[in-house]
Length: 482
View: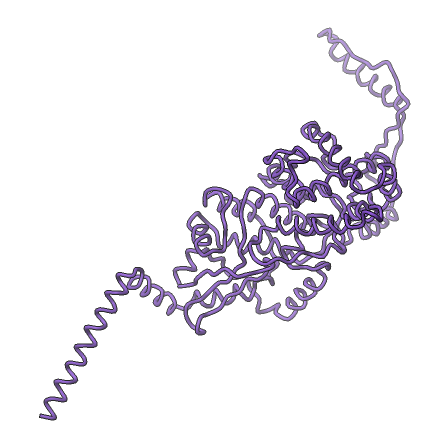
């Protein structure tokens, strides 16, 4: 039930309340301020009471609204909004793309740069600005659907179309210029280039890939090679941003939602398809091992070293390639991990990838979240980072090793990973860790073979012992033969 009152009635009620207040305070000679002007404005007051039919209808409407899918909307970060580093990792540094941060004063300086980049892009397409803008304008209803309704509702179709048109053209030209090493041609300083790269992978700063696709497809036929170059530039750009130091495997942009989605596909080795198969496999595995599955304790690098577990890098094309093997099926244990590069953009990228996986309308296997949880379990302090770096698994371009540890400890807080991912690795590590013989062997090796000099001393002692044995044998043989 709703009660609707006019602004006149609202003011009349206010006058009555003010009069009563005035009478009660007349002794204090307090003035009573009453708004004399009335406006034709309707105020809707929700009544707490409603019929049973209306309540039942709300249940049905909620069921329709809360539907998980594989095509999440571009939206504000919700689940991690209370994180102490939310602003540091989620808000753009220099440039706003799309409607969420559009119009904020701090990003006004880059608006002219976006217009300049967009103009340069249009000039290379062979189309007029009217033709290219018309394509976006004609498809604005579809493009609006890629966003959560709350972030676009204040923009008309015309305003949203122009915003997306400029941002899309500018993004494509920046990526192409960056990949070709021609950023200086667009007069953007190196420090700003680094910030723009970071801003392109913020969840709240995403543009629909369909928008970029429309702009690339509508390049004039005589400039058809330009479309191919732009698509290859996007693939190379994603490779450069992937934080993987291993093999190259550019994702297929088919069905990509936005650039952050493409980066996730690249990191997890998903080629043009989303997580349905991975989700199904995880569900099947969960059903098969419901009783026996357990969450094993986290072990940092120092604890693993105590039992002789070694860290080895592997040439990988995605983050999920983590394995544990025992050499000669006994000792030592070897944890194989993909090589990653850590720099200033690593924290924001991983944080936004995690936020993306946590979107309530996105069904996925939490591959990035699970990887960060696993890596965070290995890294407790600076020493752990040093060991990962010395093993060739982690390349530190951020600064001190303590800074790297702080980054992963910050973004690894309060995560809920997929228990089935890396489950086998964790079980194997736990079984190896709990074997007392491994601890004893590791301690002996560490004590007696920790340096070349202790090895030489052991060999010398072994040689002397051998000579003594040989001498004793000869003495015994000489006694009986003689």
